[in-house]
Length: 361
Image (tube, rainbow, N blue to C red; front, side, top):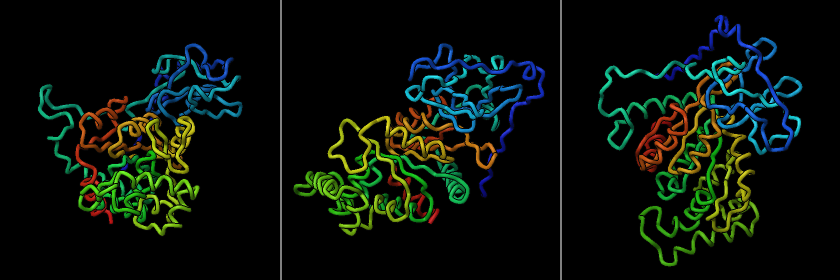
């Protein structure tokens, strides 16, 4: 079945109640990093602001930000920490247009209503059949390879197994990855596998623990830090079979956000959490599809930065978000972030990646 992009229906701005709405109001920031009272906080959905009698769509959004109107009329979503004195911030807590701010959650159609009030298996769990979800994802990724921006959010479990690691490498090399968001552990154990065929000292082929294997990831960190960059480390050691090496070869950007528990860390890992957030946001705001694999905190962080829609060449389209984990809690936590746009799949990500790769390449 060929992928068909959902068509966006904008609000009926000719409706009398919207014609009668006033222009949205702004108030200036008087202290850096502090929004004015009654600020409007953004959602994940398309939002319109009435300016000089015209409704203007917010084109690059994220949840829990505030909207700044620049002197040239441009609208920008800012995190509170980035507000500067003098920024004009939109105010108003209603979302129905009555204060000039309209949130439009049903632009791609309302969720399908259940045919019965009482029904079994309406949630998504280990008992859910995901065959249709896989089929849709295959078609989506084929479409996005040519027309979209695919962001993968990866936990280290991706590289704990040789098959899933190779599947990820193959997807990168064949154009199904536009950016990777991860932590120090993903890259560290990926490179450990390339040099020692282990991840945290366990053989990625046989799952057997190796003598002194607990040194392997530390040796990788130490040697990589000596080289000063991941690209130089990969080149110096002739590394080929690696997610990091595949990104270096293809130019796919990899944002590695640091953690309080990190060893090392590797060169290029962001130690400043806000610098990491800024770097991740550069890709989240371009994303048309996001696939989160076995990393709860990175998945939630990315989800919070990613709107439910994107404007591509003037056309409003949905952003597709997948959350894949063996834990039902982990996948449903992302779905609970305030969006119904997340598709949750409960499975181990080794099987998931191999299935995806075999269907696409």
